[in-house]
Image (tube, rainbow, N blue to C red; front, top):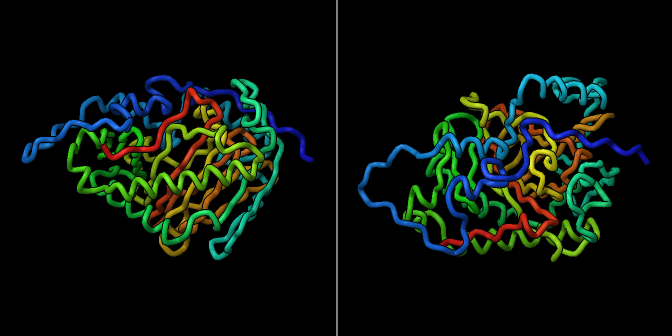
Length: 345
């Protein structure tokens, strides 16, 4: 077994989970979806300039994992990568890249166990849930392609209300966060009852069913109880294309560790909603290991899941053409950081 990977220290871009951070996204963009009805927008009224965009932007920087960090933090990051045999771009110095899952593969379940990092030791442990068995898995047998197409339709309809001026847009149905130009708005407040013309109860029911199945598979693979896992924030849709980045929020390609960026994360999953090499070029998901890069080629309906610590340092390649859709669904073992499923109030 390979030696245990050291935990990465928390940098300035990973400053906790309070208000103004990713874990405070719901509060920063307005009330979450607790079943309460949001105020209606007046019909025919010109849209006001989004309010509080500075605070919203600050919250959502972690959503796209964009942090450029301070100069000292970048120097530290480079040293950490060099220690692990990686170049400044997060590429193994020997240039070795392996494909963990090809787009054309149809994988029932593929799992690679790796030693856990020490990241979990700096957080409260929950027996029977906090990772003791770490690794990464890929499955094409959890969500069907037809379900993925329907989920993608939800993302497309929601993002049609806004979208970033750059190459990366997000839609968070839990907090209401939506990219709009260079800023972010709470779609439930900003569009009011128009939301009922965009989404249906059936959409949200499918969203819940998909989340539950992914949660159950993660629990099964890692040998824990599904009831010990809690959905956590941020959980969001992403749409990426080759448009030039306009702000740091559009720079989704930087290497990062989920447990460092979001202290609440214990298990991360991604459901891909479009096909690599058919719908878009570039945009592969890359695990950055000391010996080689391990890539996952997105395929509609494919689920990639992994423990959220430094054992799974990763990034997404820049999209060169087309449009890449996915949804990040994240889980915590700490009930204090749990969130409910979105509700169409």
